[in-house]
Image (cartoon, rainbow, N blue to C red; front, top):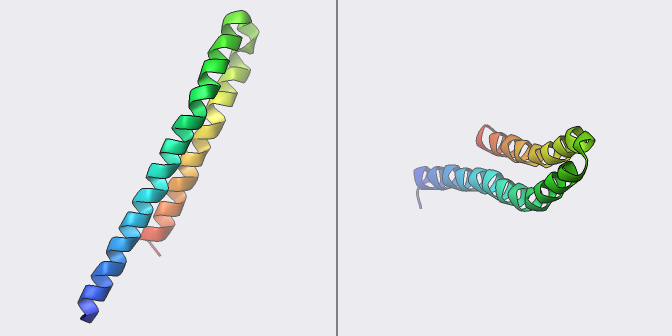
Length: 78
């Protein structure tokens, strides 16, 4: 293998790792938020005062995707 082939392979593996970081973080967040969203809507239907707390519990797992994006950016620009 030549030096150019090795460098191209390394760049490709970084791109695959970045894609996996964002993709798997998004899938995991979606699966986690599936149950949280259903429970939040049920709690809000029973008590209207729970809306703010339910919204907060729904938004918190979405930060995991931001962490996945940060990891992807670190992989790509390192």
